[in-house]
Image 1: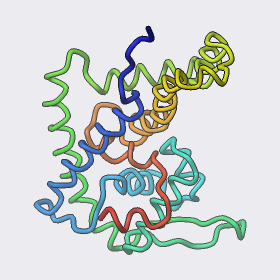
Image 2: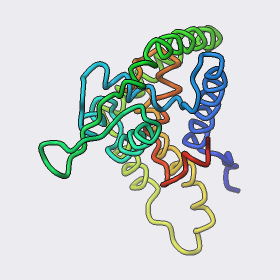
Image 3: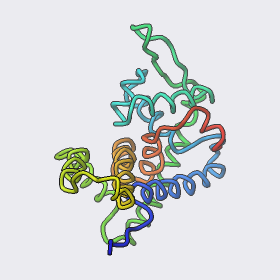
Image 4: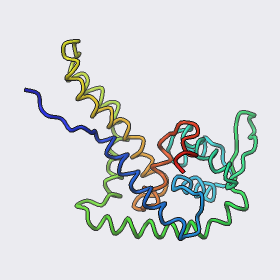
Length: 219
């Protein structure tokens, strides 16, 4: 008899937790004076404050997310008038810089950061291992040995699956879910700085690519 497997993999659970953190952090935005704003915007704005005008590639590298994910978030900020885009030295490059409206938000974003850090400290106090420390350890483990190598080794250990065994292959869903989680976890630790809820709320999100127009429907 086959072992009963959970219905959701680690990737699904991590994305669910990220959704909870982001939604609850965003619920405080109206009281902070942030309208039409999402947690995923903060890492980009902070990167522009730290490094000045930057190409999409430079922002992606600074936040340790994909070029596509950074491009999507910058496009959303551009539509909201918080950043403006210009042509770089290469005609194919786009350089982002903060607008006056974006700079005016900085004091409010500092308050958001303090709120997020305080909330995360409260959550960490209830955990057996602080989430910030666990994320750091996970990033370091994946830097030492990427997840794709671990997946490849697991595939070799399982061996080929024949047509008659295709039902058993459902167990691989857990592994696929875990693969999807790597991007989210890497983004979490990368952008906002380890140990802050602002990082968990905004950065993880930056690492998750959306289909065109998805942001407008999600509000």
